[in-house]
View 1 (cartoon, rainbow, N blue to C red):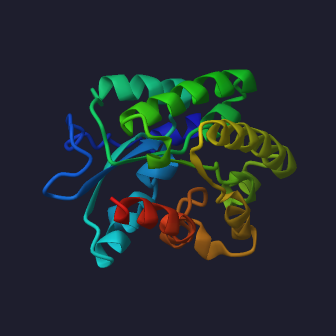
View 2 (view 1 turned 45 degrees about the horizontal axis):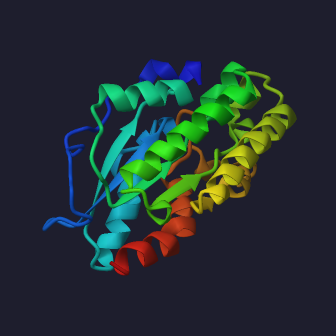
Length: 228
């Protein structure tokens, strides 16, 4: 969302180096591609979902280090450019992709989203060593239920309808490539009646909601990494 660029955060690229083997002596590396929902706008670093996921995996004796390539406000085309600018290359043990809310918010053509999402998903699979099992797509949460949307008099029904269309595209293309799709959108709508699921900015997910996301994806990620 363009309105989210005010608090844009720096990309984490320190660990985004080439890695030829699926596992290093230090453990696994999770490449998380996305926007504000991946960088964790308005929450502490330890509350970001990739960080919460890594912490939980470590409790189960699976060492994972997240590499986050995400900036608040990014659209699909901006994520593509961001990957290039961050010089992301090589192979990663696990790759996640969550992108598209800013396309919808800015009113970009949905066919642009589908085209660029396909390209990003194919790139994610390449980063995962060509193995779609090592990639996970996460649906876009519904910001139409947030206090921000209410304050701005945004049409919540329109937002929900359009995001459902975006998520249908993401799910279809994930399934076509045998990539796991995690649908966190229904849970995100619980924020309408539960303020604790929203961060202090009135827009983004709180650490509590991110934990809900981790709960949904955990079994898949754990089974993937523990089987290697």
